[in-house]
Amino acid sequence: MRIGILTSGGDCPGLNAVLRGFCKYCFNKMGDVEILGFKEGYAGLMNRDYVQLTPADVEGILDFGGTILGTSRQPYKLMTVKEGDAPTKLQQMVENYKKLKLDVLVTLGGAGTHKTASLLSVEGCNVIGLPKTIDNDIYGTDVTFGFHTAVEIASDAIKRIRTTADSHRRVFFVEVMGNKVGWLTLYAGLSSGADVILIPEIPYDEEKLAKFIKDRMGASRSVVIAVAEGAMSKFEASMSKKERREYSAGFTGTAAERLCAAMSQKTGIQCRSTVLGHIQRGGDPCAYDKFISTEIGAFGAHLAEVGRFGVTVCVRGGRLGYNILTDIAGRTKRVPADGQLVLLCKDMGINFGD
Image (cartoon, rainbow, N blue to C red; front, side, top):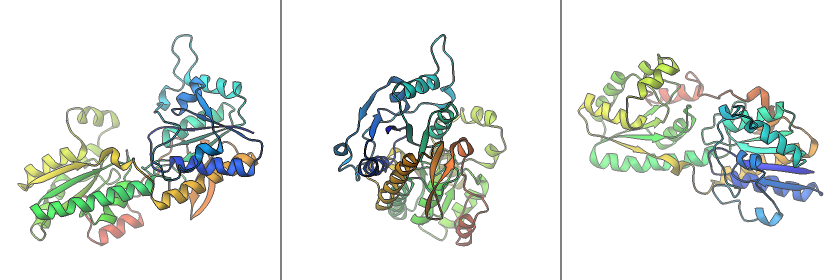
């Protein structure tokens, strides 16, 4: 069996652990197997730039962050764009898939990677997706690998910020990644004891947020606010996507930085902001991610062995399974604003700015 494998999109903890789990299953159980590791994600498939992986290549990489294959972002919307007489990126990949006589292509990636994988599947390529992202926003799976490590990093950072906030009687806005969903901010905020959690799924009211801050500072030494990078006000949420882009183009700084300035002015209280940034994506995976990544990688290899193509691995109720790629590509798993976790947070007094 000839297998192609690649890591695409943003890096995250667990990519190497998945590669290891996948390859160890193949080399141990499938016998006559070749694994071509494409460099820099889909770019490697477009350019036929790959290395043939051996058992030695995946030994000792369980604990390593990043990806030994390298990665790059290849925007989904450009995959079928025609430029002159040149083939599209999608056509290049389909052609190289056939020229290399691949039996299956395995893609480790997030939402964009899965959309492109779905396109390849529709074009007749045998594809298996493996769900990677610290955002935890892939539809149809309870968890993605890399998410729990990012939660631990963000949670630890917020707890450290609390000591500084208490020492100086300040309000701190801590910005957490997550793209356009709030899973990472919600989990990190809850596990670190944040007073306020602002996520895209629950637009905030600036006046209500300012009142909470003033009331809280009257009874405590600090207020720590976990802010999702995609958090928005109710005013912004009422706009169309185009209007929102035009509106935000007039601002500088991140979501946390803008809120920090606004709340300083509205409350008269000294506020500070911290943007955690790419530290949430880097470094070694936590024990849970090493475990789930190994499990997902091995299960992906099992699906290749039995010929179950056009799917992506998922975790549901603690069990591994799979979804049809075309069913989940382009869909986003968002935090339910009226879901059990949010309601429990509110019952404990955590504020969501609404």
